[in-house]
Each structure stands twice: as structure tokens, then as C-alpha cells.
Image (cartoon, rainbow, N blue to C red):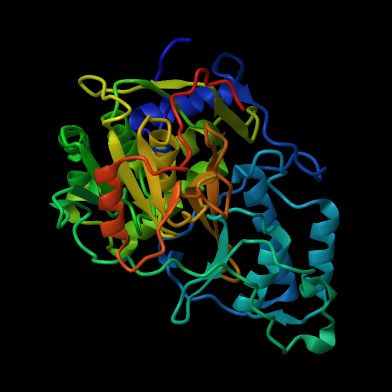
Length: 452
């Protein structure tokens, strides 16, 4: 099987736009799969613009009439059908009966407050997806994650008499605990017993300057008899930094994550919305702004190019399966001497979990700590704002699959060794010193990257 790089969730601007456009317009040569099966719809419809106006990126939401809420529901349906990657085997949008029930509920009330409308949308569109969320901004922001409710959603049975009563908040997974010892994005220290400890606190592109050092730091870790990579609280970011780090830890080929990317006007506009909001909020450091602006320009060019081809399908899904990525380390390390411990907790999510999907294939790597967050299956997040109410929807436009098949969305990766003590970092360093504990599962390189 030829060895080739699998594309990261964020490609370089010009190459990404060109490749995506070609994929959308010429599926067959690029293993472009049809979009996941959609529920029967009303037939072809004109392309809409889901670009958030600059002045609305952080505008407070407002109460809307039933008629306005119905139009926002339809915009949400359009966004899911045209941009949501969704989980494999699931339709990206609700069935027509589910939409019809929601429409009846909306007609049953004269007006809808933003929080109530966000909760209705949550109930209608929810899926077991750690990135899928609903809410709104303003002085009292709301964010509802999309784990399915434990029981039937009562919203579709509400009557006009109950219109003044707020809807109950849906159950949600607790937020991850605060990251112990906040510090720089990347920091190499030593434990009290002399074990190298590399803390990687984010893969966000805003920290690109620090993250660029990871391959060199990986080479330094490989020279030690044992080391710890502390990923606690790493909520993800740009997977390319995670992949480069993993490949610098080994000279062997690894199975890349299977990927399925949505190519559409809506997906490009939603991803551009995410970047534009970050820039508008001022949370991008000056040194990282060129990277964000380059990515934004690529997404806007892609949206424009796709919109200029009205005869093309409104959505195409570009897939990459069974690919190998070649390790870039200078030479091999013996499985008995490579004592690398990756310390994780429920704050490790998205690109952090994608890193684990790669390094778990390296012989001698041990994952210790707690379950990860469980937010990896659908990434490359797009943002949409429903124009009448100001309710926001965010979801992933690219689906991923763990090569080993051990990852479960919303559950995450289970550690090889669970650490429940008061000093997990010290316990991880002790594991790095003494090697593989008795009874812990052993993994090795896969013989084949064929889908399992």
C-alpha cells in the first residue's frame, strides 16, 4: 500500500480551496462519496447565504413571533442538510415527521424567547456529537450541548396555554475540570524524579509559534528512557500540529484517521463565520492573525467559487480511507525502551483525541489518567446564526474515525491505566520509569489500514 499523507482538518489556504472545489465538482477521481442519506425533502432549492453579517456576530438575541421562529427552523434544517458531516450511518438532518412536530410546536405559541427556541432546536437536531451545540450570545449567553435527552422531549407537545413557561434545560455532560497549572501552550519540564514532562495545553492555531516546536521536542523526548506527555485540559485545535508531533515520535508508518469532509457553500460559509467571530472578538494574538486571515480568505473564495457553479451538487462528501502516514523520526526505538506515557483527562478533546488515535499505534505508548472528553468524531466546526432570533448553531463539517476502532463519541478513549490519586502527574512519571504495568493492554502497529 503506498504511503501518503492524509489531509488535516485545516489545509493551507490556497491548496485547501482548490482541492475542495475540485472535489465538489469532480467526485469520482477523488473517492468522493455521496452525502449521507437525507430524509426526503421538498426537492431542489436555491442556495442560501448563511454568512453572518459583521454587525451580528455577537449581537444579542431577541424574542420572535411564531412565524419568524418557523423561518429560523427552516434555516437550521437547511444548514444541517447542506453542511453537517454527521456521524457515520446517521442522516445529518431530522426526518420530515420530526420537522413537522417542531413546526406544530412553534405554531402553538405566539412568541418564542431565544432560550426556548434554542432548546426546541436542541431537541429536534440533537445527536451524540460532542461538537454539536445550540445557544446564543448577548449579556446572558447560553450554550446547550447536543447529547440526546434521557427521555422524550416535551417541547413538541407544548400547548399555547404554556407559552409563558420556560422550557427545562436539557441534561448535559459536566464541563471538564479546570486544567491544573495553567501555563504556556507548550512547556517542557522534569518531574521530581527526573522524568521529562511535556505539557501540551492546546493545538489552537493562535499558539502556532509555540506548537511549531513540537517535532523538535519529540526528538528530545525520544532520547530519554521514559517521558510523560501531559494533555490534560487540551481542548484541541488544529490537527496538523498534533499529527506532526505524533509522526516525530516514530519512524514507522501509522494508519491515518478516516475522514469525510463536506464540500458545500454552506460548510465554507459556516467555517468562515467561526473564524470571523474569533477575529471580531479579539481573541487571536497579533502574530497569529495572518494565519487566521489566510484561512478566512480561503473559505470565502471557496464559497464564492461553489456558488458560481449552480449546476453542481449542493453538497459533496470527500472521503479519505485506509491511508498511511509515515513517521519522521530519525530511527526506531525498541518497544521495551519506549516508555511514553500520555496523561489525559476529560478536558482532552477533538485534536487532542486525534493525537491519541495516532500515538496509540506506537509500541510502548501508554495512555493514563481518565477518559477523554469524547468530542472527536465530527470536527472542523462551522458557526451559524439564525437571522431572526439570533440563536446560534455550531457543528462539525468533517467526520473522523479512529483507526483502531476504540473511540466512542461522548465517552472518549478509555485509559490503559486509570489514575485516580491526588498526584496523577507523579503517578504518570512513575509509570514512565518502571515501564508497562502488568495487565495493561498492549498494542502494536496495525498490519493493515483497511477499515475495521
